[in-house]
Amino acid sequence: MEKLQYATKLQRGLCFLIDALIVCGFGFLIGYLSIYATGFNDYYQNAYNAGIDLVFTDSANELAVACVLAVLYRILILAGSFLFVMIIYLIILPLTVKFQTLGRLITKTKLVSRKNTKPSLGQLIVRELVGEYLIYVLLSIILRFMNMFFYISVGYCFLQDISIPDLISRTKIVSLKKSNQEIKFSAEEYQYSDDYDWEVDNDTSQEVKKKDENATSEK
Image 1 (cartoon, rainbow, N blue to C red):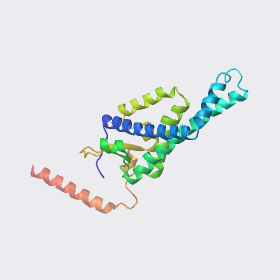
Image 2 (image 1 turned 180 degrees about the horizontal axis):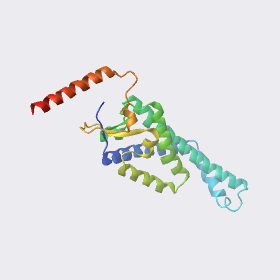
Image 3 (image 1 turned 90 degrees about the horizontal axis):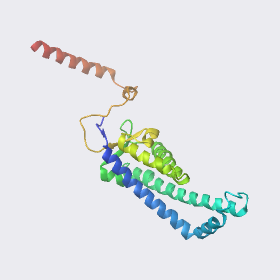
Image 4 (image 1 turned 30 degrees about the horizontal axis):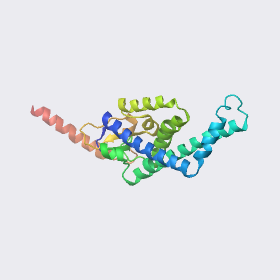
């Protein structure tokens, strides 16, 4: 089994920052280009200015309803833009370049499953779309106070070996540098497979035992 070590907190933090800046930058760029290119921004400004005062006083008013719908449409456009960028950058791109993103390439880290194997497509989807998108992006757009949760999550990346998305998808970020210390997992992850050759294992154990006995007798 390949010996790997967890990425350092500095590597994880830098990787998270680089990838977050890329996703946020392209997400906002595509989102606002869509808003302005389709003329939706003019509609949004007019509906917002006309109905924002009525939302809390006369919510049944047509102008108030139009204002709320305009805000929701704007949220959906931005959320859809982030979703598009995250699918391309965090799922499709890693599948083509050995599960690497720009942040991981720069920090010399990679994403693997808990058993040091390549993460499956399902794990990538759960990690990025459930862990990253729903927690870090969608809730932060819908609820402005979630910015505090975002900073807490960033701090969690610095303080822990695995992040919330890693916990959900059963993955981890490891360093590409070789280590003499192998990451330890739970006992069930080291169970022998059904086709394991027990006779060879017993023969090897007997040889090791004889060598130890001979070395003891010589002393």
